[in-house]
Length: 305
Image (cartoon, rainbow, N blue to C red; front, side, top):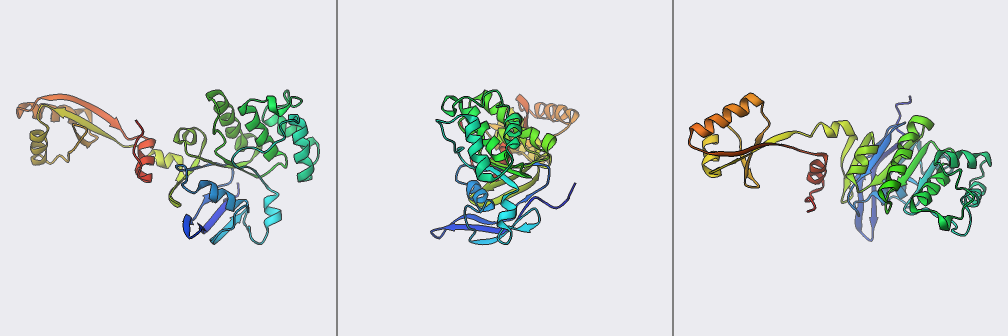
């Protein structure tokens, strides 16, 4: 496989009315992967994707797609990309097949591409139904079929599961996961839902307030999932003071003393020593630091109740 990234940006920035929406980001999307572009609403995801598609002009920076600069090879590059930005555009009074024929004419591709694209998104048996009678999930799949009609090398999707019910989300998720594996298509998708990115992506970029905070393999991010111990005692202040004299680093949080993870033998010894020092140990539990914790830490946000 080619080691050259499908998407590479250098110092990519965008200002609207002197307000920075994207700040000098260096994206790198490897070939054959599903790259999850993750961030809260308003973080700069859609603006970045629009710049990659030539729908918004960068204020500064360079965009390279398939090894070529977008500014110099715009037409040839965009012919290799399929995209679905925000809601799919379609004619509700036409059938799915008729909508696909409109797109086929616009893209100038063979008619046989229609059948293959509808087969990929599993709409071949619904192609003669009017789109106004499609479910939201079917409409989203039709939008993806339109993006696939030109057999793209890169598929760009902006919040593809927005507004879908759990069944629809599952359908889109499985469809996206099949793209690199079965069809050799690299996927770049944005989402504000960590749970979706975690289940789909192989690489991830985290953006907030226009700044790229993390980029790399999702496994590397998962390796940050360290755990700690939460100890609740009858007198946390006395316990913290005693632990400090014994070399333990403890922080008081949520009415518990938080210390770094230790072995079962070390936990048993600490429990025994606290009790022998006259401090009642009420509870000891392990607390894992989840991907959500890491995401919230990177973006400076708090957990929702």
